[in-house]
Length: 224
Image (tube, rainbow, N blue to C red; front, side):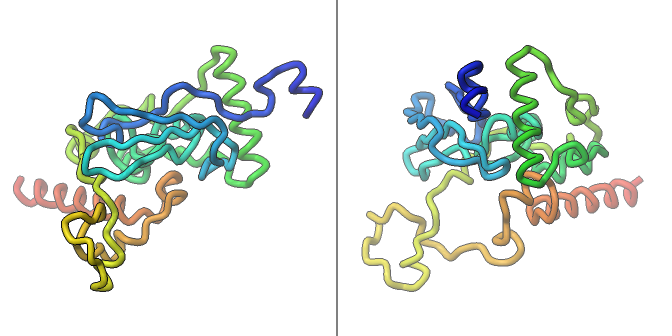
């Protein structure tokens, strides 16, 4: 490794970036966002390599947000580094891949060693100016994905977290409490996992949207 670093300062495979790859919803509605940058601050939640973490507050009443996955993993799936939703349609990976009839998991390994090698190879190609094939970039949008896609930013998901003391009936801060005073969401939507969302499997949000798509198709068939 030391030999490689002497020849190439980027041979460690660690991400170096100046601005995150994020969607408009996560960036927030404030045009004057103050963002902090920390080089190699955390490991990517997908490939576990150290990467540059950006942190900011997307609105006055919003909670602080930060990038969760590296830019290599973000580009491989064309998703936001924070919410992991598709950058073009604003949909979960599972919904996008199902609607477009593609499988982006076939070429992405899941073992630790293979993931690191795979990510480094794509970083090397990017530095050399070589682009890699992307299934979602070639697929054309159909009626299903056009009906489900989000066309406007959804700033509501930037809200502060639910106050745990309020849930237990013990919060004494009242209106001064920076957290939301409401009961948390229960059911399948509360069982979300960042890796499941990235790989597009067992995503409860995606399952809900796909059920909605099926009901819309059934409605139009019945109406016709």
